[in-house]
Length: 192
Ligand SMILES: C[S@@+](CC[C@H](N)C(=O)[O-])C[C@H]1O[C@@H](n2cnc3c(N)ncnc32)[C@H](O)[C@@H]1O
Image (cartoon, rainbow, N blue to C red; front, side, top):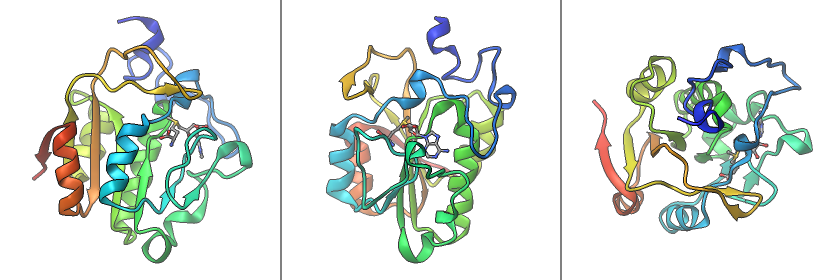
């Protein structure tokens, strides 16, 4: 695997836990900025209304509320989860993959706090105990293993094809319309 992608899957020498992190500083890589392709967002939005994207990018604006680190809104520290139940029933999270563990923990917390649905993008890392098994296998409702490779955007332009598969995970409830959309994108598995 090229070193350019190894940290995305969490196997580089600089693992998630080794990255310096404080409430105001994150050690983000270029790939942590990659945006979700608009076709996927459009399909999701044809099925559900996205209320909040707590880790958004200036070039992509998903949902009614966008938290942007550059604007001083830290989606890991911000209290959006506390008001999720009333204000943000559906969240969309394509996190910086360097911090996917922290964001998965946040998503699980959100659903425990009463948020209806969190749609969460990760690499396909089914062998990884520290985040896949701890959070996705344990708490997800559905996982959609995408057909082929999802091509992300970098500053609005298509990136090269990444050497990993993408999984769209649903935490909380999944409306039938969203389930239909997910089945167009890949193989959907219900977790037990
Ligand atoms: C993988 S990109 C996804 C952007 C957008 N949500 C999308 O799907 O196209 C992750 C984004 O999260 C932002 N980000 C990273 N850490 C954050 C934090 N703690 N709070 C809010 N945003 C953060 C990064 O600046 C980056 O734009």
